[in-house]
Image 1 (cartoon, helix red, strand yellow):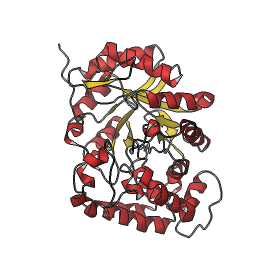
Image 2 (cartoon, helix red, strand yellow):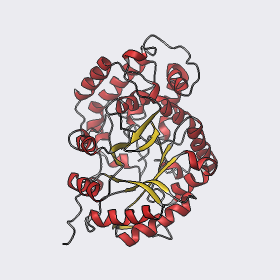
Image 3 (tube, helix red, strand yellow):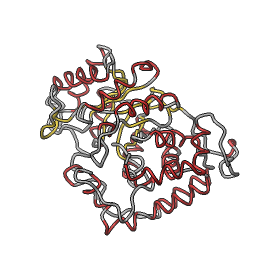
Length: 386
């Protein structure tokens, strides 16, 4: 899920134009302007994030790029396609190597945009895509329910390969668990695709814990993808410990809380029809006032670290585990550069503990997703017939 919102353009760009530019430029190898003692924390005393990390055995940049809303914004406007290509190319130029999309985004259209943009540097990046929704293979029509039948998975991957203009998908996820298909059958289809060289690694998204164990036993997983941010910390209780136990990387989607943690939303924000935030009760008028305490906290740390709110929010995720790689999305070049600079933010162990304790002290009110969407998370696949 992407975190780009048109209403964020002013607040985030203003932050970039001020002190936050220093962190972004530092991450890109340029000298930071106006660096303070807060930004110049001794590397020997800071938590080392680094520009690259591993999801299982797959090495990627510490921050990736989510390519979901490049065909449309939350406000339903259509971004300039050539500019989306420039942002993707610019991300590569600035060290981003993980590009995440799915057949469902568009549907199909964001895979096409990513494929068009990455032809000249395909072999130096990692492309992740997903299958699992019941989407017509030819027209892209979204139909009710899910579809992870093995024969459908193989055809869906063929379509993704064509749209991405590539011969392999580096990391292929099941987008949501299909309650009608044993996960072992899904793993079998992916294993066949791996044998053909069409898929190199695989993962699951928003799955049940038992399904995760079964899938990993059938075919070792590289990554799990789920929502995770200061605004939604659900994976901390059970998913992250299980990933650590099994040696599986973790990729947070919506790491900026659909723009909320970047300072893009307040109590007066109105949402267009079709904008999922309109139906998430954590952004309802009766809840958002309490939740804005997170933004207040981020502002204080952004000033303290001479960074932006988004960089602090992403930096906090990076220090939770060395195998976490967030994938913020954007349709703005300035925001892409800002997000890519998050790995340059340094926290001492004491600062990391202080920030995490402050986040923990804030109780987020409201639900993260509409009930019909939430019902698709944490699903367990049926047992395989003996």
